[in-house]
Length: 79
Image (cartoon, rainbow, N blue to C red):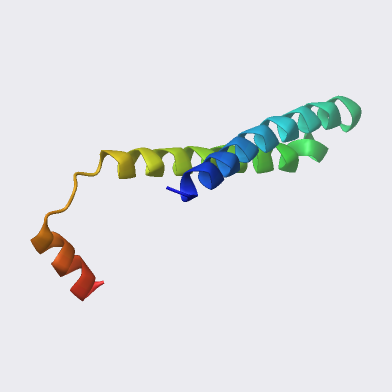
């Protein structure tokens, strides 16, 4: 239960950093051209994709069915 606020904060920060870097990339494109600011857009896209991966992983964990006693015992022994 304690991890939930931390993961939400990280997801929010990733999303805002991605948006902020897009704005910086647009400014750099206007000032110096797209070929000099291409890497800025790639960083922004990478942050956004990482945000999406984290969001989908969280959704999968929420939809995972609960394990019974036998499955828990097996997982504890083998992992």
